[in-house]
Length: 369
Image (cartoon, rainbow, N blue to C red; front, side):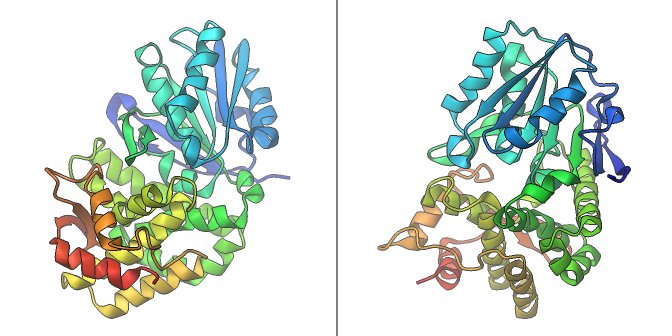
């Protein structure tokens, strides 16, 4: 028998506020889907991996609330987070005559959530959507906060919109079917919350990393809840990343360069972020903001989560130069100046620029020969 709802919290954004529900058995719990926007139609957007596992259960729950429950199944993988795949969602909406009250349900990981949100923001200039994340990474990060979008060959998530969901439904039971590599990828986004905001949580992660890797439900419940609490607090203060919210991108500037340089889908997003956090910690050390002991502590935890801690060689001739070129098209760059999230002492983070020479030395130190 599944346990009842474990936790509920709210993203406080005035009229755009919404709840995050965290628990086991939520897809089969009729109360999880109550009080959503009224409409005649709902569209479940999923992918070829997740749909066979969970689409039927979600569709059964939604049929109690909507006259028509449609599905569109996308190909699975970061490589398909593009315009061509996005059009499949619009095709399904238009071919079925869906109106502007149609509710979209994103059933899947971060790619499905980002694309469904972007489609919802764009279709008829905005229809409601609900996040139903089925990966750890999506439950603790990408499903919360309203960032939506697709990749461009020259940069990750460069085309998109801020558009908040109506609800986030984190059913911990969906994590049971995740491949071990995906669990590790999700743990990268859990770990990041410690150095940027809460070292007590960081201590807890260190003490429970084996349980998290093994998917202990109580450990996962706490990790998802605390991660969402921290993100909810940050997003509530800075919805559109005008300042504070940028700290949530710790490790992402280096990580996005790895993803773009290798080709989307070679490394998972969480793998690139995990390695990117090691690189960002080394940059923080080079800037005199943390000590070597902190860098090694973070590196050990990231390795214990099953994540890479050495960056790949993206270019045989000028590896650091290619990293720098890729990072200059990062969304946080300003007038060609790369801005990094650095640790300004354990539990605190801020944005800063760094000269190319310092960044080059960090990349050379952190990348595999």
